[in-house]
Image 1 (cartoon, helix red, strand yellow):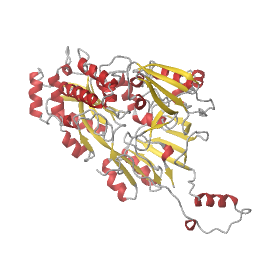
Image 2 (cartoon, rainbow, N blue to C red; image 1 turned 90 degrees about the vertical axis):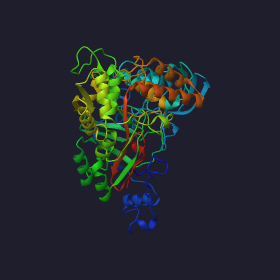
Image 3 (cartoon, rainbow, N blue to C red; image 1 turned 180 degrees about the vertical axis):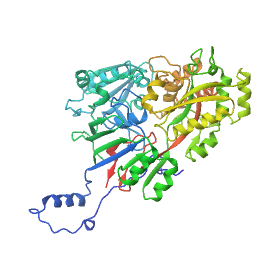
Image 4 (cartoon, rainbow, N blue to C red; image 1 turned 135 degrees about the horizontal axis):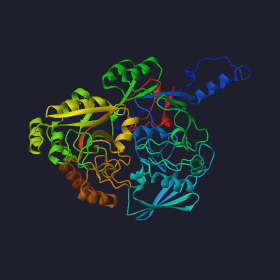
Length: 550
């Protein structure tokens, strides 16, 4: 798999800087052709002309509310309108956003100095009151961002442009956890009855679902869910625009062939993900295909909390509470064939819930339990399921590369050991509310730790759900008290050697429990027209402020 750049993260981007002899010879005078002459002079000075960017994705951002769903596409898209205190740069480094400086004043207090002169899209000034409001909103019922606010005890106003964030215990990676937490206007939210985020589990929506009022480089012009969304440049943005995109037309196109056809015909400029079978075709056709490692890990989750599975032929008991059944499912999955046939080599099978580029990855724990259908059958028989059983599997069909095909392959694998899978593949608009309500027995999901740290996955995906943010996406409710104890210690430990040892111990506990079934990390695949230069981040975020259209 080709790397996108030497640093493994962002493909080199092109800047158009024409010389005078590249500009057509024009016999103009300021009096007769002022507009053309100004354009020519702008080109000569290397200024990029404003452009419209047409983007196609296999799914839509489900809401304009930055706190309603912790999902990569939504966070990426909304991140063009809403900004955090701290954000990621082009090499995934931490850089100032709405906070210009942050310092740890005590082991449990961080001070953030806010950027002055920033205005929301409606002209309201950004102040410390908006920060306090945004953190409270993100921690409220209905928020999908509680995992990032759970360690916070209090957010205090020092003055209009300074806030102190106090954590319950020392939290050395606090700035890393804030990179996806968008700041909202308290005034606008109250006036529009959007004080609390919408709850995707209940299908509730409010003004923030369809309208936006951030501080970011783009403003929301038009929103037609599942049809198209239009953003326009925010002329009052405080930052420097690296790109020249003045308008973005975002169109969800779920059908892969149709998405490719739109790029080939010139109807779109950028599309993702690229169907793996079309990568070579697009490259040979003169299009740019950007491929690189993704931080997301794809895995399977199993309901381990209910005494009886909701969607299963087994009555009166829950097979997934037995570690032998969970291990049998693991050993029944032929991950190498999925890699070769379904993923066409564009995946890296894993035994861990985090990718190699994530801090805390344990290389010695990354050896998978061998694929062994006979061993799986034996384990099922020992657990009392010699004839297997039937269970429903929930799977998205518009979120990952080949997600439905992966689920189909897994269903076929499990059928060979006597497990009948009722596969329910559906758009994420219905898939997410269902699984987030935990109306699922067996599901496929992917997780990208926004902190690029193992603790993010530990506390959100693997720790026991508490209702306060911990385990919010542990949808099968896997639980091990020793794991929870280690996750809490990892959160506060500042000694890297001790912290890494704790992560290793926690990961080993989870693996021995077969708490989840990790599958693989997938390769990102975006395609663009030749006149478009983009920056591809390994978290699959697309920031329009970095895109140039020549």
